[in-house]
Image (cartoon, rainbow, N blue to C red; front, side, top):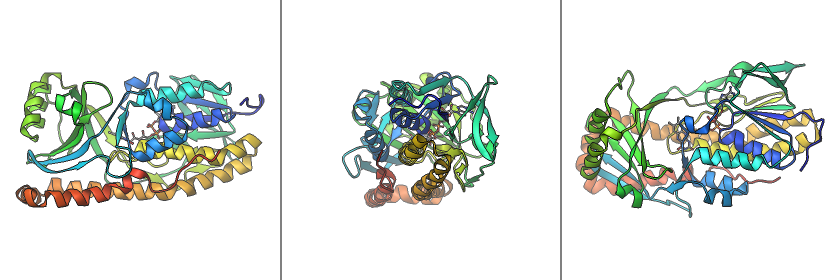
Length: 405
Ligand SMILES: Cc1cc2nc3c(=O)[nH]c(=O)nc-3n(C[C@H](O)[C@H](O)[C@H](O)COP(=O)(O)OP(=O)(O)OC[C@H]3O[C@@H](n4cnc5c(N)ncnc54)[C@H](O)[C@@H]3O)c2cc1C
């Protein structure tokens, strides 16, 4: 659809899952959209890959089913927990419904969404430029300033610039943080044939309370490993030393592999996790979306899924007022977007927090860990069953999200 030539565009800041999906949905429906992305290359940054059935369904609702099938991906076969090198329990995928949790290359997904958006004449892609400020006029956000000094006027600015959102900071919308920020180290290492045929998301908890998880990512031949940093922990270690640390927590076959491939373990990438939610996601002329409005914990892969679901709801509610050029109605729809999305976000964050507390309890209590190791042969299955039941609401979504435009 061709947009009106003299209409001002919607400016979307940040081409992560929230921004790229919303840009595509609006551009395809005739809205003039400019998408600004600071990174020159999606490959350079760490981007999570885990998509739950709720996120896969959102992509399908956007008409991305055929596109999804072409992207580099790998599904999980199970979730497997090990304490002190011994198996505690294993839960098979898919837990409910048809779709397993699937690792999808996020750079490839974002490029595919952009490729679809670019087919529309009203779409503009500004890559390698950061938004450095917002422009205000008559009590409304009316555009953004870019890092090259240029200014973009907008009928609406959507800030989907992630958990440290500069637009959120500049516009005075306050983030209420959950008080348990953690840091993670992210490693890449060569795969083991067992993960090729049985890609279990494998969680390891060591005798000293150290914790990490590993799984086969979307790229062929590559395992990803996330290490939870304890407060004040130093992490300057050689790849061999890391291999030894990981191996000490792993079952025998995996420990052997980790020692074998230790020289090829990548240097770690430190990722700071912050979690929270803004009391208000909007001001006249401005909407926060995805992590900018509600930074999600990485626990049980929720953030990409929630970002995609935000984009669907935003497109549903914004399309008509944007097409009509009705600014007052646009501002009213911003309130409706927050009202529709907030309950699911709050519930997902609460469930993630409960998971985090349980993990922390185990990490901090050597006594509890030792008791569980002893009781695993009798209790492992029951613990696994109770864990499985807790995961189900985090997988299918906690609200109905469908495209209505
Ligand atoms: C270690 C870790 C692992 C995770 N793993 C998963 C997972 O497996 N599955 C899952 O669902 N979630 C995962 N998450 C959460 C997930 O990454 C986020 O919730 C999700 O990416 C949010 O999407 P978004 O589009 O809102 O923001 P982002 O994906 O953060 O995208 C924001 C974009 O804005 C750009 N940007 C930032 N500032 C500016 C600026 N000033 N101007 C222009 N552009 C800007 C950035 O370059 C970026 O491209 C993980 C998080 C962490 C920390």
